[in-house]
Image (cartoon, chains in turn blue, yellow):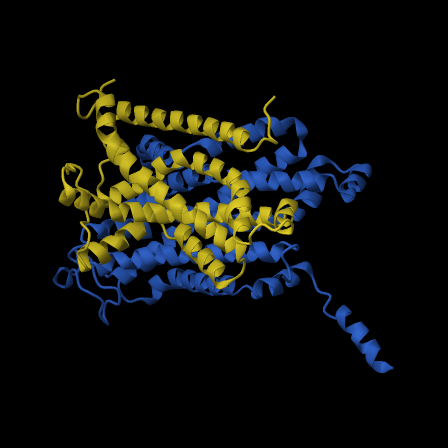
Length: 305
Length: 241
């Protein structure tokens, strides 16, 4: 007689929070877990690495130029004898920082546009046509033209490094918010029709409170998925700009810039192009896998398949 | 309008570079579609099989690895180490006989493959999702129930309906390919329209940049229209009245 009772009480035991549930679902996605581990490893390496590694990225050592991988230089050296490993670590800082900052900017913009368009019917038509307008733009040529027009002004205002950083984060942010806005709008439209929103409105909740208290927490999951995909997109776009020679200057390397600089020495030192490219590709791949796993974990319809 | 850098009419510069872009980019888009559609069909029909897993992985790699890295990697492997293909696209090369045609194929192979992989990664995802949507529909069950050969269902009935959204995606992607080709053209030194834009931007050649961006804008509007019209033609349930 006691046995059925214990079985019956067992399911109530692990009644945990929603986030723990999502985490346990996320852990079953093998690709996402590997991606997460790799991304954490890369983040730790680029944050702590430049302090731990004994060589500075800007130290010249002309006698040891264009070397292949060795114990002293695990990724070889470039045409001025600078250690590639130190440059990759330092460049990763900038690349990841650009990725995260640009993602945050595009997320804020996208969420703002999406929530406003979904919640206020008057704004919907205008904001969504505006989103369509941005979606129709060819992004890479647009980015290149914006950078060409504003680069010198911003450099004069903020100095060469901060100026270009702000410009790149800004242009990536304002050209990648559209997907987030569309997804958030769709979800807001669906949530707005639910009864708890009606209940909240009937007790006189103001629109601002309604959005911050009831709407936003419920659209967190698509926003989180967009966040991961946004990081991947921003890293790729920044590298592409640097690769075309319109990103960061050579003495302030990012992964894209390192790849661009090393293509000129491709025949002389072919191994050198692999490292920054591999860093970009694996980081983006891991972030995309995290996004994939997160999407599966957050979508209750796919659960437990 | 005259280019500030070369003092020649901008239109001449564009006409001069159009064939290379159309050949390389157009070919890569066609190859990408031809790879993507069978992959999408197979991975949807055998969902969660190892083929599907492989297809998912390849397409994940395809849009995670940027074209400037795949391009450079291919140059290192196939042009520098193995010396199979030339690393630089020779635009002055003319096809006159069989040998020069073979050379043309060899020099086009790498840029076309790089761009095709990137395009195929995106299109195959759309194709797979669209196939999955259609495979559970009633008409599929009807087709099987009335005794259509099992092979005909995923190869004829379902793709015809699944291709409707994919065709619009393909049409919408045509102008974007010109944008993506900027990087690939730069990697393989193809002097096409994308490279012309980069030269214009680096040299602050405003008339050239304006003309090219205007051209891109026209292409985008045009292909958005094409996509809309195609959707109406292919799917009779959609009517614009």
